Amino acid sequence: MTVIKDTLKDQIALASQLLLLVLAAYVFTMAEEHRRWKTPVLFIGLLSWFFLRHRIKHPIIWITLFVLLAVDLYFKYFWVANHHFMLIFMVLSVLIYSYHKRTDILLKNIQILLVIVVLTSVVQKLMSTQFMSGDFYYYMSNRGVLFRNFINFFPEKLEIIKSNSKNLFDLHATDPNIGEHIVLKNILPNLGLISVVFAWVTVVMELVVAIALLFKPRSVWTHLFFAAMILGILCTRFETGFMALLAICGLYLCRNLYLQLLYVLIVIGCFILILTKLGFH
Image (tube, rainbow, N blue to C red; front, side):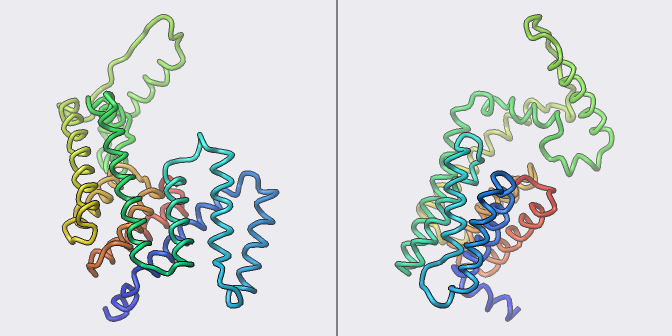
């Protein structure tokens, strides 16, 4: 327990190390495309870091990875996922911190970024009639996309999901002009009502977390709600890359030892899922 306390004592250093771990995994995954010019950039960056890290004050490895992130954003602006944008702002905050060395500025940057991300998610959901009507959850549940790892324990539900997927595949193969449609079989009774309730609960939960992070970013209750939100999303879908970044942000802001440990476990778990390709990047 003493070793854990000592490790968690400097939460900013620990959070930055975990961020670097996730960032490196992401950048190396993205390096599969345009590898001809990315390989020498990575090679030169790593070589410079290895030989010059104790001689110059500049964070070479962070700068190298940030440049690759920025280049990918430029060429794939309409393709990269939300966590790419979040990564850029988090890395930029850490880069600036390496020069000004002011913890309060770093934590404020992380706090505002986190509030904007969660609040934007709330606004996006409220503006989507498909989401607020429950249609999104209804469709994704009957296709087996949501709660996939729990559904595997119920073979009868898997049969319904396979039937729905086959019917959808057949529908996509038809001519859209003839106006054919299908009715999905429900994997649960009253799934339509459950989907509506689940949609509203999701929005309310995210809104509460955003407000709490804005006004009480260090509160234990804030991080209890925030950690519960992250775990809830991971149970619904393995959005591992995005959830790892949210957990790292939580680690930056949290002061409670047990919640810090929970955030670390979430990040490590997500990182393993990314490496083993069991979750989304």
